[in-house]
Image (cartoon, rainbow, N blue to C red):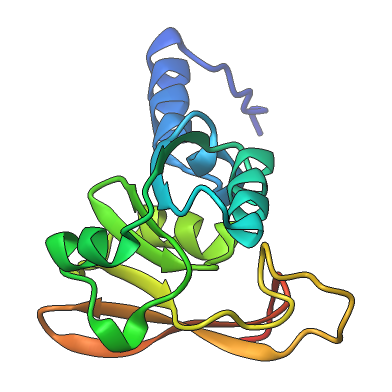
Amino acid sequence: MKERTSIMTRRSLVTLLAAAALIKPAEAIAQGTAITVHKDPNCGCCTFWVQHMRDAGFSVRVEETADIASVRARLGIPPRLAGCHTAEVGGYLVEGHVPADAIRRLLSETPDAKGIAVPGMPVGSPGMESGHPPQPYTVILFGADGQKPFMRFVGKQVID
């Protein structure tokens, strides 16, 4: 029986490399992705959230405003989803203390939605690490089809 050897041709190598380029590992999605954050200049937790985003590899531009409510109204953030700050990334809106992992998933899956939000200021969420035990919270996907749970976290850890 004749032994079969496998030789990679130039064409198969190019095909393999092209396929690999299409795979977007979650960590790579943030690298260099621009995010604009609208926040109150006096808010410390917003500053900590901005640092969380930079640490996750996002390129963050901060726009300081004392009237974040008008920014939310202009962008169409539902009032019951209001958090502490508002961000824009990849054509989506991000409201409140949303973990970087949820934003990576949003950018990777590109759902038909306006954005994601963490209403309020849950203890333990990025920027809200205060030494108290973190509480579970839900990241909400919102848009023309309404609102639904997108991910659940305790602190920065995904729980389902």
